[in-house]
Length: 184
Image (cartoon, rainbow, N blue to C red):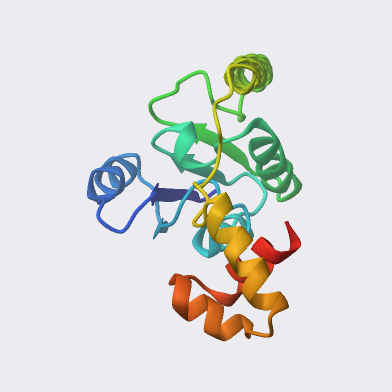
């Protein structure tokens, strides 16, 4: 039975040394570590290698569950991969998260459902806030580079035969911006 560790930080200026020390103290060997965002589901090659190294009876250990997955969908996908290898998952700071026991599997399922529910509530509140802001006339996105007067001038000059490149240089914008102004 191998105890495999996985440590992850989100950005290059963060360090995972503390995670690695805790994983070593938990008798993890080997330990896979990487600096990559948890949002990336395909861009975590060390996690893929850690899971590929698991065999029946092995345990993948992380310091916190959020080092492994940021969404319940991602967590469930990873748990399926770990279970397919015949292995379990344990999080050191989340003692309820231990899929090597029936109680741990139950609690992880319930906690995952609650986390998904909370994310849905947050999304609903954000959508409601955006809707209210739009009703008040709040503009979202980047501010337009060209005002209506400039767009009219561009249309007139383009109709007179000026090129997109010349107009872009005169108005200090890209040709794509000129093209969008002409289309709009």
